[in-house]
Image (cartoon, rainbow, N blue to C red; front, side, top):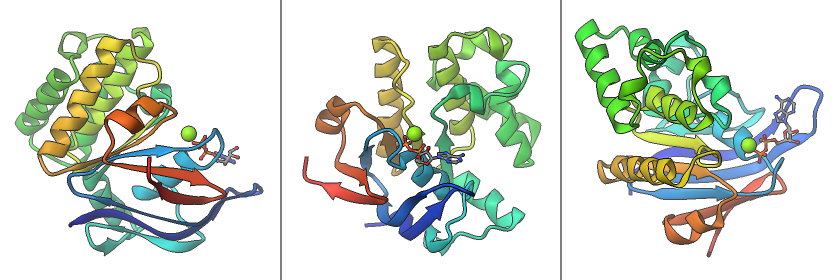
Length: 223
Ligand SMILES: Nc1ncnc2c1ncn2[C@@H]1O[C@H](COP(=O)(O)OP(=O)(O)O)[C@@H](O)[C@H]1O
Ligand SMILES: [Mg+2]
């Protein structure tokens, strides 16, 4: 079993806040569909934000593809190609004027050739069914469209592990099925998906592994 992302005994408190992670450990392996359950405020988003170095733990470490996370700028560039994080609120993720600009932002930052960037944007847009929205301003999209554009922007980086933070919550059933199909495709290609959610249906019907955040730790559940 290849472990793609490992959280090892993390301790984290926000500046001036309470301890949110307290001995949190979890492993996400290639080929896994994992659901992370937990009440509001239990630390799901905080755990996810550690996987690509957005947050740095005060104790413990994060290991991606066998390498302890390197928090230098170059190191973070490497990890953000491997681990894609889709935010809970697409408005926190989308910041470019147009959909096409937004999806191409990540690949452009990788310094890829323009042709390669275009190919990736087209592919990700097609996967997320937003190809006909490319010229639209991001602020004029519906919530479901924003969620799919945010996902396309992350997929355009071709991450091997995709961490999705409650991304299915605002989607209509049709968009929901589409996004789940995208997750399945990534897993079939040897990647892994970790979805933080309140949706017990997904935990029961879709996940291979269910983890629960509680009291600062993540436990694998038998559900
Ligand atoms: N940026 C922040 N600054 C300070 N406290 C935060 C911040 N983000 C989250 N928290 C706090 O950390 C705890 C865990 O939040 P979060 O990881 O968002 O939980 P969940 O995603 O499970 O709802 C909560 O008590 C929340 O208020
Ligand atoms: Mg959250």
